[in-house]
Length: 126
Image (cartoon, rainbow, N blue to C red; front, side, top):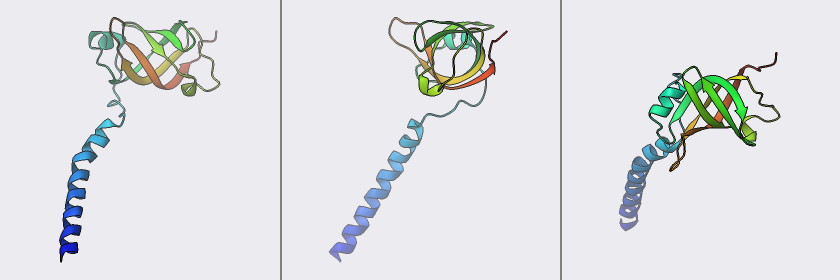
């Protein structure tokens, strides 16, 4: 009887723990935005750290190895494109792209977008 009661209590505690942690685990997963395009101006007006965004625009210049200046019709922002996002693909000035990524903010720095997915709309070649 003691074993049966102990098993029931263990199962009950396990179920309660899973019920409490499952929503947390689900919420911690990066989720795609609702599919709506946003603008640079909207990002700069409300630069919420780690918020997922989807944006279209053009590469203006390469700032460093993985950082680029990006613009749309509303403004300009820095983006970071890691090698694993663009394996073997050169990023060209003038290239029109759609990106999905997260807003990154840091103390005393302008927000930037950490690119997680990149689609080339036009490669910028003349």
